[in-house]
Length: 174
Image 1 (cartoon, rainbow, N blue to C red):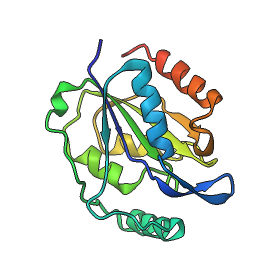
Image 2 (tube, rainbow, N blue to C red; image 1 turned 135 degrees about the vertical axis):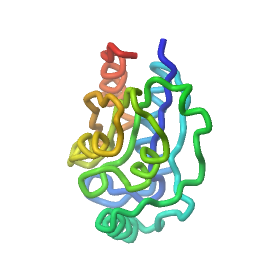
Image 3 (cartoon, rainbow, N blue to C red; image 1 turned 90 degrees about the horizontal axis):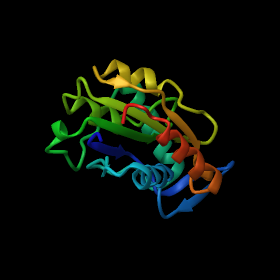
Image 4 (tube, helix red, strand yellow; image 1 turned 90 degrees about the vertical axis):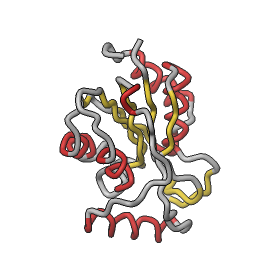
């Protein structure tokens, strides 16, 4: 059995939710990360920034858009000291402006993960994986497997839990 890391960035608080703004206690991507951990085990690692994003959803997306435009690399709060211990990294994030939040780019570029397997998963409100899989390939020499897109507002639904568990179990390389 491979040593598994489930690294994710997730936004709690104000989120876009089926066409409106809703306050949520746990981010959608975190919900999916926990389902993955329940299915295959592994260690959870939350990617988080030193400077928090604005609590207001619309201010947050403006900051995220500016970070994308400037190719910012926000400083992260925590580091993984033992990245070499992991063979497989499930990498989770919301789709922000068609790709990963820039904090996820910071995470990927902070480690030598050549030769590891990255399995992306993304929560969104209809935009799917966007170009995130391509972007992961651009900033790492890891083996990237096909990702999974989950509708954020339905992340905790029985249908999504089943979809995530079936997807994880279908992975032959882990």
